[in-house]
Image: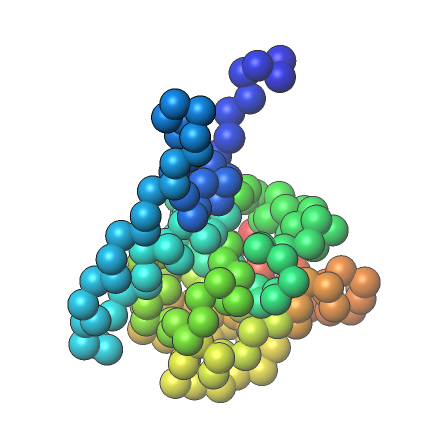
Length: 181
């Protein structure tokens, strides 16, 4: 593959151009004004704002949602992303199969909104308490939980998992069970 033929996933392209459309018009850079916010819907039918819709990595082909929470980066630090892709590869999955969101990009959003947008069958919460996304149940780390047609797994943050062999083995046992490995 040459440098002239690099194909970027749609999520990366969307991330590069998330806030403006840039063009040239007689030497001036022109930014497109954001669309006006739609009238708010009742909480029951609330959808994620348009500007949040593309703030995820992956193509979600297997309807697996990965939830992280980092205030200092758009998605994940490089070392954690590399660790996560290793976990996915061990599960015979790739970034095409999942959608990964940074909860910091979705302030106040709930599991209902995420399930509506991503149509998740499995949700892995890395370092994110179930109550943070308004899940109406509480469960400990490494205990797969069925709720509303979806399997949830609450786990320590990737940074904690990365350097702890015992935590990694507990996660692996759960992932084998969830994905039938």
